[in-house]
Image 1: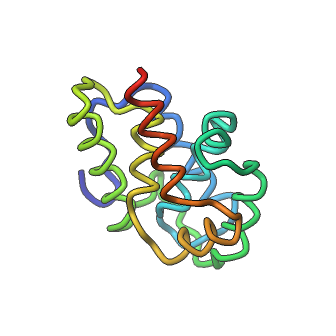
Image 2 (image 1 turned 90 degrees about the vertical axis):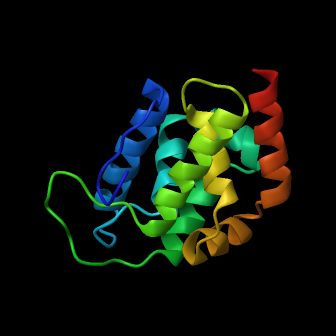
Length: 148
């Protein structure tokens, strides 16, 4: 998995969230990359109820906070945007979590756990501004993962 490559045993739902992350980055005219904040936006767009349950706040609150802390940047018209180092860490954390829980595929909850496991300045500030308690959110996601 490098730069713009996205591979592995991801469920259709997790793949959809990553595609939506790319679309969110483009739509918001942000820098030409997919960061952890974009991955969270992709999850919010595709699975608002799952994310709301995990984060304990309304999806719009998180989206608004991310928009406040993310800056506009140059547009990239290439077909796929590269992942930042931190978003690659999110994907690795999601894969590791799936593996540790003996899952053959990385699903949306694994991806959400990965987002919550990695610290990046923009995402961290947005989560705090939205009132998200990261530790509680991680606990809720892990509980959902272990329930099946």
